[in-house]
Image 1 (cartoon, helix red, strand yellow):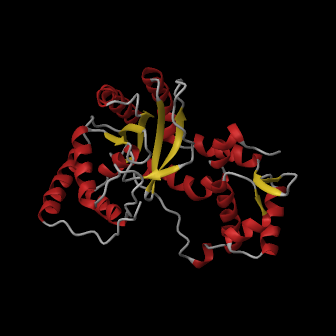
Image 2 (cartoon, rainbow, N blue to C red; image 1 turned 90 degrees about the vertical axis):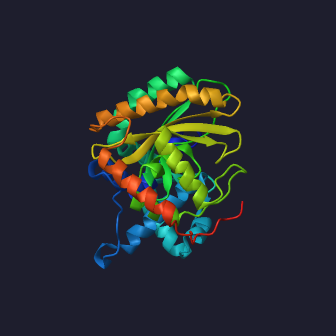
Image 3 (cartoon, rainbow, N blue to C red; image 1 turned 30 degrees about the vertical axis):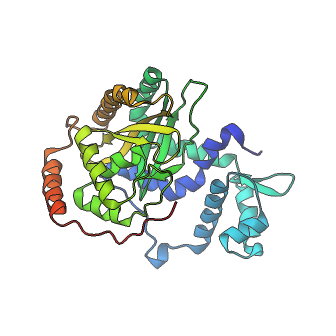
Length: 326
C-alpha cells in the first residue's frame, strides 16, 4: 500500500522523525531542556541501525518515491548494501514499492508517527487551545518545539479561508527568522542563547530576513519586552506570523504557538489584535504543563537575563559566523 497526497503529513512525521527527534522532544517537557541522543560511546553506535534510519530519513525528506540506485547515491552506500536494507524495511511495512520499483514510506510509519505525536505532553495540553485560537482568528495555527537550531511543527490547525498557507507537520524552520523560532530563542537562558545564536548561519530567505547577529539580538530583546514575536515576510514572501511562548513546569520555553496567514490579511493592526489572543493561549497551555508563573517569565531568569544583557551591551563579541548569501 502506497501513501501520498493527504497522508504526506503523517508519513513525513513517521519513523524518521521518531528516531531522530522524538526522544529529544519528549524529554523537553520532562527535563526542561532538550535531551540529545549521543552516540559517542562506541558500544551504542550500531552502524547497521544508523544506516537503516538514515535511509528512512532520506525517504521522508524526498517527498516522493526513490529507486534503489538513487537511495544508494544519496546515502553513499553500495547498491547491494542498500538493497538488503530496503528488502528488510519493506518486509516490516516501513517502506512500500510501487510498480516502477520506486520506494515510498509505508503504512508502519503512520502508526508510529501518530504514537509519537500522542506522547508529546505539550501537544495534549495545547490541542483545545489551538482549536479555539483557530476558530477565533480563522487563520492557520501551529504548535512547534525546538530541536537544535530549528523549530519543528508538531501540530497544525488549517485556516477555513480559501486563501491559506501551506505547511506540514514534521517540517522544521529556522529559529532566527520565524516568529515561532524567535520566541524560543528569546526566552532561552542567557548563556544558552548566546551559544545558540553564535552557532547560527544567517541565510537570507527574503529581503526582510534579519541580516546580522546584532540585529537579531535587538529583535530578541523586543520579543521579551512584548511577550510575542512576529515574522513579517522574513522567512517566506507574502506570509506573516505572530507567535507566543509556552513555558513548562520548570519555567523553560522549548515550545511556541503561532497564528499564520497571507500578508494581505495579516496587517499590522490585525497582528496587534491577534497578539493578546496568542499570548493568552500560550499562558493557559503553560499552566496545564505545570508552569506556576504569569505572562512574565520567572523572576530568577529575569534577573539573570538583565545581568547578561548589561554585560552584552558592554562587550558584545563579534560573531564568527558568516552570513550566507541569499
